[in-house]
Image 1: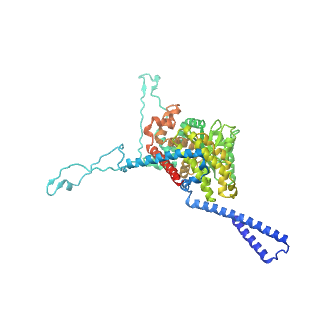
Image 2: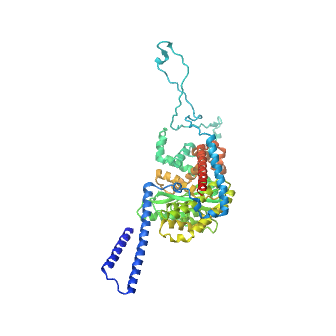
Image 3: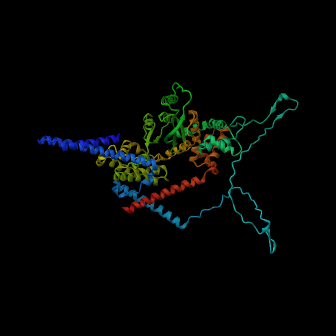
Length: 593
């Protein structure tokens, strides 16, 4: 369409040129002026159309670049801004706060420098972990080495030891449990007395919870579909049918369902909840489902299945939602739905009173609008910044706006290790000044000249339209500046989706959601997933209803041996590097001024 428009412009310009060359110009002044006005208007219109075509071409070029090279990192694009250009530079209160921040930054850099000088980096140890079992094997020597041609038999004076790491496939074994039986001699009417059998995961106690935990960990943590797990278990000497593995998973879902409901209830009562969703393909059922009276979920399923069948498809694009507690209930609750409609969030937040953080998709905002004031929507500055980063026009204005947004994130970098009350005070003292400057800049007259169809104009509209929601986080230190941590949970769905491709039914999707909730929440607290899942199953099967003790963060306190310490250290090191980078950026900004 755009190429046709460009061709039309060229033809029109040629037509005007021919008229100017071939036609006799008007003789009277009024007609000449009218012709000049008409030509000027035509040229102005054509210039506008050419600018719009250039913008469209730049958008297409950017899309092509993303398709070929992938999305660029926002952090790599955002170079340290020249702080002297920022509109809030002259604010006295902000200058005092910035002086305090620069002093903190100087202390961070000096501490890091001293540590590097006084604590040189330890050489990497290549020794194998000391806690692993050692098996000794004495290597037999050739007979020729045991005697010397000149001096006769040699004396053994010791050994040179080498350590070699050996991998052995997981061992499967059969545990034979023998229950004693007692009877009264000569009195068969008394019957047989025997210990009561404990509740087992599968009828007949055929499979231990360790097998179930291995299946759950393999699929929802390592993303191995069931058919690949057949090969995995076959390598250890047991070749189960797929139906056997699926039946075990179904029993796990049945056992953990009340516990998952308990976790979801805690998240629903949290101060703040982040939400996001991603696609998940579901195969169509053989028979069209019938909607149940008064059941919105079944009605939505019937509607989506009918639409897919009418389009000739054999599957539909379902959605996997996630709700993540942001302050007290630090668990990730997954929910499978057949559409992106707000039915899912409506059900989840039906009895909640909290702040809901997410992208500004109309479905997310409509959930809040329909809540009669129970919910408050918090927009994500990560999405707002991404809109600006992806803009390819008005580079000077774009860099200035990114510099101001970066200043907001610099405040957050300093606030990360503070209590939520101190974080809130810091935001009210500094972030409000930056936000006021951004708002004043957005309303400034020069920005009225930005072409409305440019990608930069789209970024500005996003900021203006959602400005109140973008400011909510400042007044509550328990809410993060963006929803990035929740967005990253979608990677867990995407990784699995690449392996198992689709779910077979609504029941299968809901089953995956429950098990992903258990695994992802354990992963959030750096737990050994297999150990955690097995213990949860053991306690639930034993009749425990103390769900609080099974929560990942509570369970972690009583099982420190099940914590992946290397993940804890990685996260701490990453946080330290971010703090150091932010400190250096603040000092660099001071030197530029």
